Image (cartoon, rainbow, N blue to C red):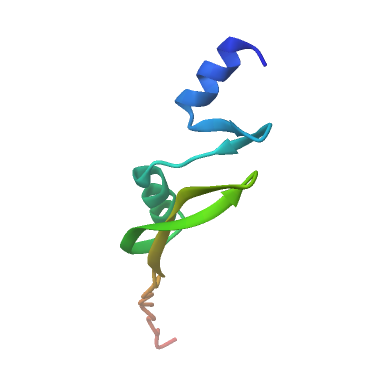
Length: 85
């Protein structure tokens, strides 16, 4: 892979894991994505867990987001006029 592409990927949070380009999100990125998709953010948690990679135990973590879909309420008031024709 080209060094420039690697630097650009790293700036975007894209890293190589076992030869696969994988996006890693900052907390603020995740929260913004949730809000842009019509949810109200309630809580963001960092969930830690252990996993085995290549026979080696490693500590990993993921973001867990608790959110509620926004309720869009529209109120349409119609003004109706009657004429006495």
